[in-house]
Image 1 (cartoon, rainbow, N blue to C red):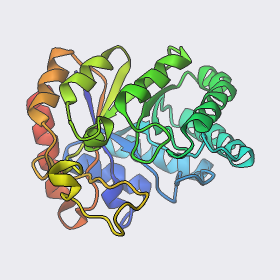
Image 2: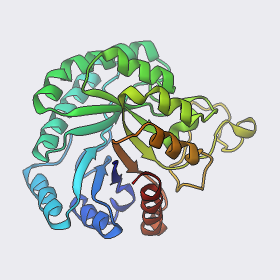
Image 3: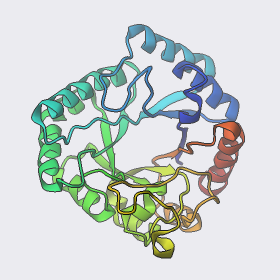
Image 4: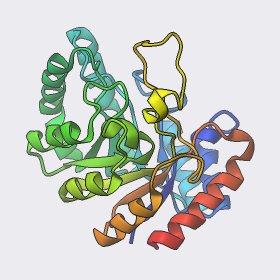
Length: 287
């Protein structure tokens, strides 16, 4: 049985983090995955949650019946600049303290870094992992890594090998469906990628996206041509080109029992309807 979590990203602009738990309950969810927001933890910034914030979240959990299942922070802990990397490790240590206060025992994150300096960033990432290993193990928190467009590692096979190379039982893998076409350079073979990562697969992010490689790369146009950027979406299933029949069939075949996070972004005006439909689809496929 999977744990289906809502990423409440589309609600952060209109309500507090604690209130997103009540919104999740209203939509029918039992769990949330808290992605970056300025009230708690923001991209590459020191976490701003304090004791009062934690107390408010714990109160919201009790009132709503919704549990904070995972956190999804983004810290540039693979930075080539050593002062930057050290600062991001400090950010991680504070986040782990907050996660422990919330009794969150699983976190999903990104490799970060820069794809133009992959070797140097890989070395910095392993260094950060070594420094943070005592913290993760002291708190009993597991970490799941995803390859993200414009990280130092963007391809599925390389990302999974990087995770395996750390040789840590608490370090797992997360497969992000809206990154599917970046993960294998346009092929979108979700069955192969899910199956190959099965030994360490602990979370799946669900949202759709178009294939940026299709039609000579003109499915999505970025200006100026050749700019050093990556483009993808986090859309409702059916608005993109990810093979979700294969995604769900493979997860059933693997008897996947980890976290499935619904992470549609950018459709704020219809967020309730979208998230209800996504929840219904996931329940029909995996419950």
